[in-house]
Length: 482
Ligand SMILES: [Cu+2]
Image (cartoon, rainbow, N blue to C red; front, side, top):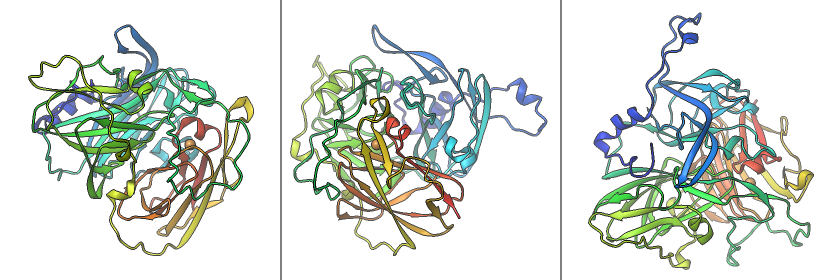
C-alpha cells in the first residue's frame, strides 16, 4: 500500500520497503519456454485487472488497476540500469502502459500513436528500457477512452515510478507519495476545476470577440481521493515537530487541475516533473495539473491536526485531502483554514533563473482552439486548425534546438505533454525564465507558453493535452524525426 500512513518511508529503509512494494519477478511458463532461453526475469510485474477500491467506509468503487493496488506498486529503479517490466493484461481490451517522463524509445514508450505494440487482452508484454532520467516519474494507461469513462486515465491504472540517481542528499525525515485523483466521472456542462479568470492575467491570446457558441460536455466527478482514500478515511500522515517531510505530489486525474494547501506550512518546491529547479522556493499553494509532479519539502513547525487539501471546498469535502497529525495532539477535529488568496497564484517562473537561451534552429508555433459542442455534444480541439494526426507537419532534425510556442486560444487551461523529451520553459504569458525542465506545462486560459527542446530522442513522439477528453477529441499531434 502507498496509502499515506503506510507509505511513510524513512530514507534508510526506503529501498527495502520499495522492494517489498515492487513485487519480485514471477516466473511464467511462457517466458521459461521462450525461444530466447537467455531471457532474464522481469524486474517488476504489473497485472491489469478489475478491482474494487474502498475510498471510505461504505464508499467502494469498481475500476481497473495495476496489481490490485491504487496507486499501483511503487516502481523504484536505479538511473542508467536496464529494467524489464512485465505487464499482464487480465482484461478484454488491449492496453498501453506509458512511462511518463522517461527518455525511452517509441517502441516501449507506451503510446499507440508512436507504434508501441499493445498488451493484448488476456496476454502479456514486456517493456524493457534504460531508466532515465533520475527523478519523480510515473506510469499510467495510455489507452483512448473517447465516450467510455471506464477506460484509459479514468481508471485506477496509474502509479509512481521513482528513478534514483544515487546522489540523493536525503535531507528529509519522511518521504510520502500523494496521488490526487477523482472517481466515477460523468459528463456535464460545468468545468469543475476552473478558477474564475484573474483580471490581472495578461491573456495574450484572447480574441477580440468572444466565442458565443455554447460549451460542450466536460468530465466532472463526485468523488475525490489522495491515493486510495477520501479525506478522513485513511491513516493520517503522522509527523513530529521539526520533521522535514518530502512530498512527492502527482496529479493522476484525467480531467482536473488541483490546488493544494496546508495551513501554516510552506511547500519548499525542489523539483517540477521530477527535475530539480534552479531556485527552490517556498509557496503556500501548489497548483498541479494532470500529468504533472511536484516534489516539495514541508517543515513541520506548527503542531496541530491539519487538513492538507484542495482549495475548492466542493472537491475537498468530496474527498480531496489528507489529515496531517502531529504526535501527541489531543485536538479531535482536523482544521482547514484556507490560505490568503493573494498568495494563492501559481507561477512556475519563480523557480527559474535569469539566463539567456541559445537561439533556436527553428520556431514552431502551435495554436490551440476549441470547437464547442461537436459530435456527441463533446468539445473538439484543433491544433493549427486541424485535429490529430498532422501527418508530417511537425518534423524534428536530430540534434536541432526547437522553440515551441503554445498559443492557447481557448477559455480552459491545458496541461500540454511532450512524450520522450524534456523541454525548458522560456516564457509564460510574457514572463521570461530559464532552467526549469518539464515534460508537462499548464498553458493558462487564453495564455501563451514558450518552451525549448533539443531533438535528441529519434522516433515518433506524441504531443497532447493531458486531459483525457481533450486528447481523445483532437488535442494531439505526432512529431517525427526527419
Ligand atoms: Cu486540454
